[in-house]
Image (cartoon, rainbow over all chains, first blue to last red; front, side, top):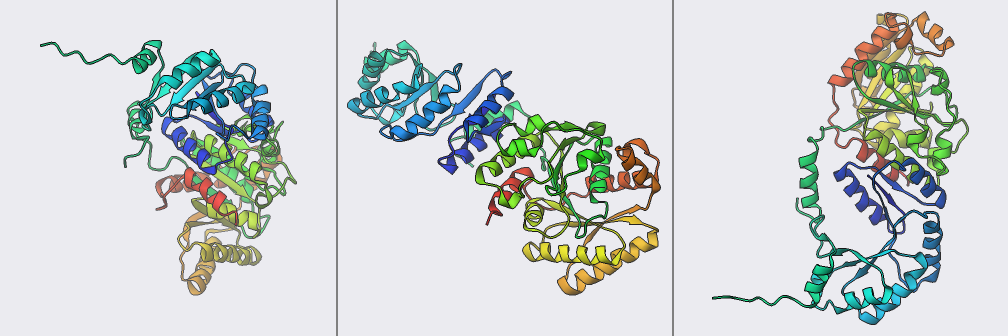
Length: 167
Length: 287
């Protein structure tokens, strides 16, 4: 496995990923240009998994979005997961999902499930964008607060199974 | 310490053996004056450490006149220049040198370390960090002389080997180098190595003179690593573009290199860090 990051906008982000890489004993590579990214992917092509971190940014910033798109266009074989927060208002979620269409995400990840108690917007977003959910983030602990998303889990979030006590 | 990665750390620990105290020792080899055989010393030490089972990578940081690849008869197809431009990863330009040592070749005339743009510096430093993860030693062949870029590397390294010959000019320049380093960090370990000594007496006199000066003016004693005797086999090996330790293992200089390498292995400096602190320092020294 290898870690790549395109996130150099926040220096702390590189530092943070660097620490994770050190704990896991995996190589990390910061790609500053499309050229960097190409070299790194060529070098790590035999790895089972290459995870690429990208900078988070204001979805209304079309310029940054365009830059990201130029990077991702370099990577035709890469699976792009769009990370959304479960605490975002439903209308904003719809707007963000629509703006990020340009990056052609294939899957969605919802985080911060522990910070909300209304899960409806997750389902409506999934229905709207017609893309599968890959993971759910349920807290800040690494790695135990990231779980594989299943339809059963989402159904349970929306229609919780009542606690039935039998005497 | 408990943070959001506590559990991850515990999981990783269960998988891997406890890391050693010093992951890799980062040692810069320098000399005040040029032409004292510094690059020969780097090659000799690297090969001697390799013979004793250590994994060694040599960084040619003499960006002005890069030549350790020539000294070892290596022909790089790509150099640090390609790494700094982002065209190659550092791993891709690593050369396999004699006795299993790895060499990171520079190319003559590329930009000095101090003048690197942020992107290039990040590429270099991150590459070094990845490469050093799998090595016991990172030896840095610095340029001669007291330039900003040399000082920057010296201060970032954990330890410094200062090479001097018995000639007065070399000695004076060596003292100047000690002074510059000492003023920045009085605790930085500096090992003194006398190269090209005609006799043990001559080497001892050289060491005494330098010690007297550093003690008197800086109140500091240098740690003595030893001497490499004047040895015709060195010149012969240079002509053949091979390391003296490799092709003349019984020559006086090769034996001296082996002794010094064993010493270095035993004497671990009391400095924290290892490679991680090296690259953090390198970034900090930016100012």
